[in-house]
Length: 256
Image (cartoon, rainbow, N blue to C red; front, side, top):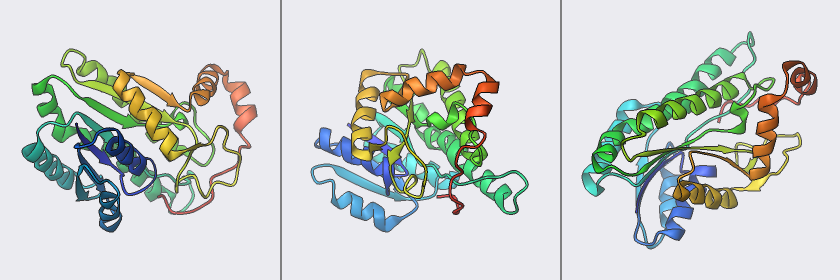
């Protein structure tokens, strides 16, 4: 088993890397994130696998391309690539400074997914197997106040992954969209509002790995949020606006 995971220094990416290390002894797991020290610490927690740290920012296309070439050159085409790196933060239109935050969120959460997959597609297509996995969010189903950048980025990610799935349909390479609900991570820790069906990151990672193994094209985790997402998708605008216009705003901290 050969796996490559971005955003692996904490949160969902860390949990996904650890889950693959647990269920695939002898695996090769490429772990990419901005914090090299955290990657080294994660590698030390994965005995029995070959952990390969790639300290990089997914907004650095050149660094991602170099990491992809290195991984494929040393280990061959990966079986699973998880584009997980993402950031969140309030983005209020017209608020000074939020224009830069909006752009940074889109660059990380959307373009970063594209750039994560790009170095691996040819090798995986040539082999005729593997899974490209994008971590989206139920926040991509409907927009929420103060989270225009994050919601837009996750909606774009869902649409991009759907397009990619169609492009690769006859290649043997699967495209999997994972849409988390509320998961207990550093990203959700600052939230001071109710988070229904809150799930621990390790439980999420186990269910995500199961969905990938089963060949799911789209999975909402936890499953209860899947029903919430279906309801939100069909809720008329007037009802949606009345219900969520005064929803609590995310605390104002820099995008992380």
